[in-house]
Length: 194
Image (cartoon, rainbow, N blue to C red; front, top):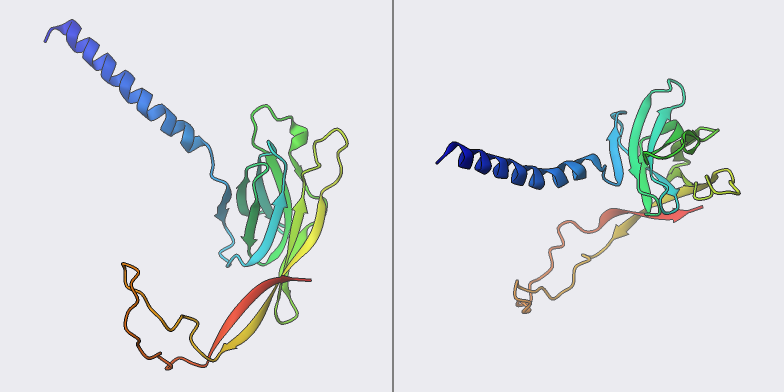
């Protein structure tokens, strides 16, 4: 191979390699919708739902209300359903606009901290934050409503699976007696409540 042919081959190979890698690098810069990190070390069990409008992309940071240290971070794609489970505690919510052309006024913090805690013996207390009106010509403050998950302990007296079982091809298998060794059993059922 001549020197000129070798240079052309290397140049073409590098161009092809760049053409294949460049889209992957662009995708890596785009953060996925949802939880980015949890630095508290505590289990995330309390509901936080944020409502946004299309194009209102934010990075949400929950700051510990006492120490002002970042506790939880998440990416929000504007207009998509966003629900996050957060650890117990009291946090300030800071929303940082993700668009490069966003003015500094699009980044903001909620005025009052939000508390995520157990109320009573069976209620997980969280919040729904609606910021879809912020940034419009007639901007309004964020609407914050409680969002509570209740838990009920239920007792199962019989197995929940059907009497007829099927094989991989979808054909019914011969009748087999139920295994009653673990019944009655206790299960927890969760539902949204007041």
